[in-house]
Image 1 (cartoon, rainbow, N blue to C red):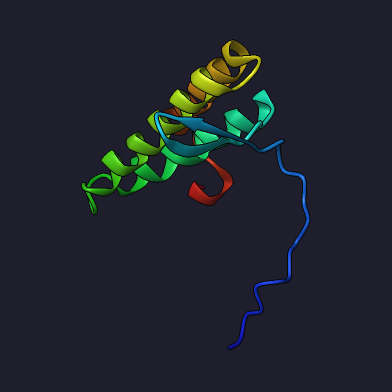
Image 2 (image 1 turned 60 degrees about the horizontal axis):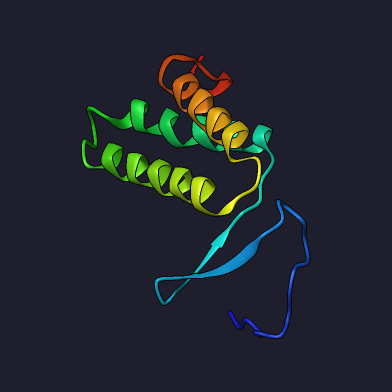
Length: 102
C-alpha cells in the first residue's frame, strides 16, 4: 500500500484550534456539547464492558476522559456546557445499555 502525503480529506467535525501551552503544541476539538456527550458515553461504555476481561483498559478510558475535560476547561468556549455534556455522557456510558449490548 502506498499513501501519498499530499492528499487530504477535508471535513468539519468540530472547529479544531491549535494553541501553545508550556512550550507544547496542543489542540482542542471545538466540538458542540452534543458531540461531547457522545464522546463521554463512547469513552466509558467500553471501559465498563471490558473491565473484568481487560482491567488495564478502564484506566486508559478514564485518562482519555480526563484529557478531554482538561482540554475543554483550558481552551474551549462554552466550557461549562461542554463539560456538563461530557460528564452526562460518561454517566450514561456507565449505566446505560446501547443497541450493541442488547
